[in-house]
Length: 103
Image 1 (cartoon, one colour):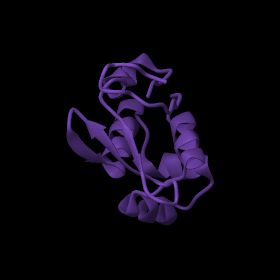
Image 2 (cartoon, rainbow, N blue to C red; image 1 turned 30 degrees about the horizontal axis):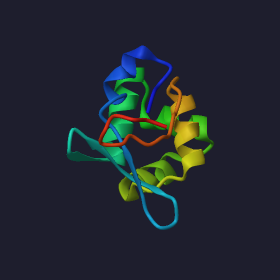
Image 3 (cartoon, rainbow, N blue to C red; image 1 turned 180 degrees about the vertical axis):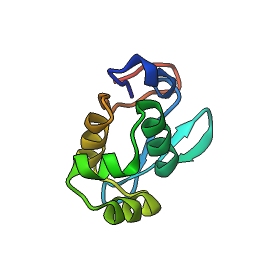
Image 4 (cartoon, rainbow, N blue to C red; image 1 turned 120 degrees about the horizontal axis):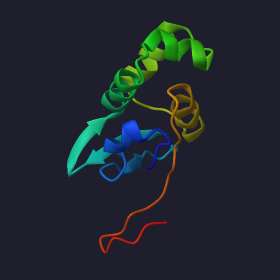
């Protein structure tokens, strides 16, 4: 996953996505450790200097709705794209194979 903002480069090579059966994002895998969607969003917001209220407003959601969605950690790919845009980054979804090949 690559973000336009080089400041968020720490996410780049360490995260992979895991989706549930409804194609909702569940977790990133960072160096073998599970990182929740909440942690990814909190890190992105902190780096971008934005609050959850700012993000909710950018998404057209109430702060309560965003908070509830963050608690469950389930976001569609389209919602992840909107979140990335709201914090000034880009979203790239792909696969990384054990031999290093990426798509």
